Image 1 (cartoon, one colour):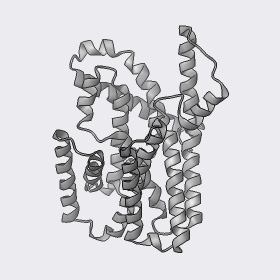
Image 2: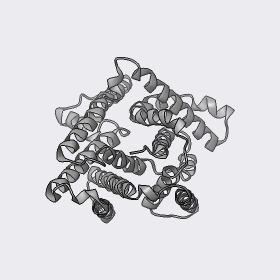
Image 3: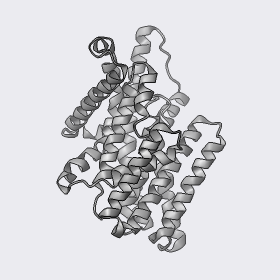
Image 4: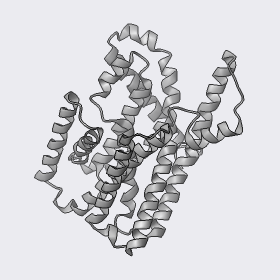
Amino acid sequence: MKRNLGIDLFRIFAIFTVVLIHSASTDISYRDGVLRYLPPANACFAFLAGWFLFKPACENLTPSAIGGLLAKRLKRLFIPYVVWEMIYVLADMGFDLLSGKFQLSTWPDWIGIVFFGAGSVQLWFVITLVYVQIVLCGAMAVMVAVSGMKFVKGISGAGLFMMLAISVLLMRASGIENDYLRRFAFLLGYGAFGVGLRRAVHEVRGIMDGPIRIGMALIGIALVMVAWFLNVPEVVRVLAWCLVFGCLPIHSSLQKCLAYGSEVVMGIYLCHVLFTRVIAMGVPVVSRIIPNGYALVLVNAIIGFVVSLSFTLLVKRTRWRWIISM
């Protein structure tokens, strides 16, 4: 099936939003003022995880294919995650040791660090995304096994996952006391939403060309602009940005560049926090040159993104590339 280059661009744009969030060391009001015009990063990443999860199995969905897909995704995500989680934990320990606040972690602490992202505020999202993909793959495998490989071949498969997304989001809205389970439900809802929408797009792909595609992009732009000024539900904002990027007419000559950029996104996510912390140390100096708070936030984010991307591309060319993506 033809690759949607707009979705690849959406993924790259989403990681820039994440870098912007974590590199904003100035007044938080400036950061929130900028983010208001950008897509909700965590929700979009979960949505895109569901979208890309289903793509390889669109034409030939079998339980064994789903199992192989899951094993490949876990290998690509979990091992690099553990490496970077340990890097951040050890770095924090070093800072604590220098400040005289060091305490040796116990085994229960390490279990929480590795399996729930308790060691790094920034990387909880990665390990939670692993669990979301396990659940979604399990759901797809059950659907195929029960239906004799027919149920998810049509629009009904999309409907089921859309219903799952809505139910999980409603469950989150009703209130879950455990903070981690609440975040997991949030990401699972958007991941299922991504799977369902991907399935639906696959069914109607024949009519999503020409004027209809441009019209959908314009609808997305209109929804994005409405979200800038009104307090609309987050799921509407995610759908709006998906329409904008997914319906963009992008020339096929950019396919290799965008596909490669989309593949290194997780590497940027894993390493960017390290570089944004270092860059943040120079904010007092840069603020003298760039006094405007909004401009300073964007400059910090651009520098952090470029440095993280450069590091990821450099490592990807060495034998250590497994620390950013297997």
